[in-house]
View 1 (cartoon, rainbow, N blue to C red):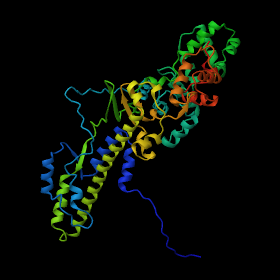
View 2: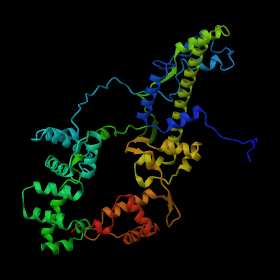
View 3: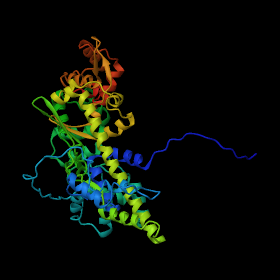
View 4: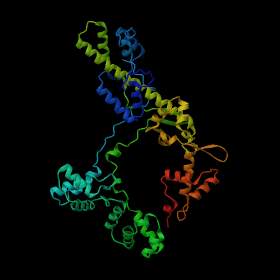
Length: 484
């Protein structure tokens, strides 16, 4: 049975301004700069303010365009749009750094890792089709120097994308040619193959012969550091085994990492969103905004609305459409300016709350001075919702006297020591790391032993928690840390 019925319910919806604020809040300094430049290009009603006018200038503009007058149009008030025309006030503090001593530094673009390989490949005596296959294989080599796609997949790609019927055996043969290029180890499919490629290029010595044998026949037990078994299998002394292991550890497990000019690396430079300086025991907070332009409503668009107010009711349909377009663009510009203002306010207040909680760390730079802090603590202090604090903390960095840190660095849960004091889990991790760094590498500390050492310092922590912290620090288990 089909029937109609009326229901009444409350539904929360975000306004365009709120949606824009949420999106802008998550952007980093570089991303917000790009986003502002994009908006300036797309919205002609948005303009970049070169100089902020004086108060008297603002009054004059208000008189000239009747900014304080009541709008008569039912959709908007003229004053709602033009008051922002000359008041780009969304910056919260003036940047007083001088540009007098700044100079441009020329940037030299060097060849990429793939270009370096292709340059060598073109020196080989290859046919046009072989070179084309080789170029495709090089294009699939990752930045660390490995090629993790099997020959069958590469053969299928060449068939589908370029219409080339290349047998798997031919792919394997040309891959072998690429593995002869520099740096040694390039084009391997796994760590074992990478290390072998490097060793086989070196001059032969007894230690290197044994190293090749270990990688070819005993790679699994070598990776588990079962050195006694290896020594027995190769019938060599402990001193000889040390020399063999030294040969292997001198090899480069990621030969492609020598090139730091790939696009990903070029784009990974960190631009801090906040600066907290320690000067004479005081903390000075600022937000670098040198590359973020000040914004205002375009004056010409304001004039167009002023002219419209004088001819209200006499305009043609074409003019009404033009005015609707102008209004829509000014609305968009106002929303964007307000969203930038709110973003800066949110960032500023959230960072000030973090500084207040972690004041001791900003003064000393010691991890042991970090206080336990979760999103809820910052939210309570700055008055924002936890989701807002989370967005501010994501992908944002602060520059201090002690280095550049992601905001997430300052967040950690708490544990209670024997004296009943709350300590940061980051402090526990720091202590755990120091224990492992100072351990006897021939008899590394097990997780149970680490639990005992932490207990001696007054920290009651379960073994599984120690194991979790150790894994978080990317520290392997005791057996894999063992050295001879």
